[in-house]
Length: 270
DNA sequence: TACATTTGACCATA
DNA sequence: TATGGTCAAATGTA
Image (tube, rainbow, N blue to C red; front, side, top):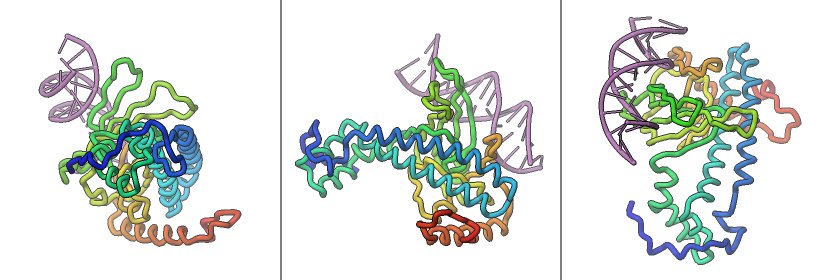
């Protein structure tokens, strides 16, 4: 897409109308969402081992729900960062730009290349759980860093010519007790990750292009050992498909469950 | 035995 | 030449 700058007004350094401003300082909100992410990760670490003892549908469902929580938080952070860090985003603050012009700008190269461009980095306590299947192909010591950087490519690189890669590196200084990792994604997945017999021990987070529909959650599967972090594919064939269909029914039931219950009982829904 | 990870070597770039 | 990214053989695991 070619950028047409004629729609871009002079950037304003101040926000004329905060109620409609896209580019105010959202850092406090980002900080709070990052806390939520850390807490969810800790809660998952407590709960999932318990469900490991009961190998039924609930383990998969709980894993997916945790993944969805992380995904929501990550996308919220991404959107907020988008509106606070790009030097041209203050265009959106200008009082002289109308809604149509804003929409146009958000489809231009400046916005799109930054939003979906060469790389996207995230901070997360759970770097392996992003809803895609990755294969580690390298690990390097990085200068001035005591932690190694790991290199991953899409499992379907050769089968489907998917060029998505990512790097994972533990952060030097963590502000909380939770160990945080910097995950950098390069390129986008062009593969269909649901090929092959992958039964979900699914945890999905931080997927830049992911959608939150139950269909998307089912289709995007990563199998990860909760103890080693290594990726595994569990073979189940027909049983996998049946389980997946059951999961979709379950998710729909839960989606329709009353929200005003004092106690959220999965057994009642089941 | 198949597939994933590890790790040293190689390559590109600044 | 140092650094970081990728390759591929060796190794590990289920």
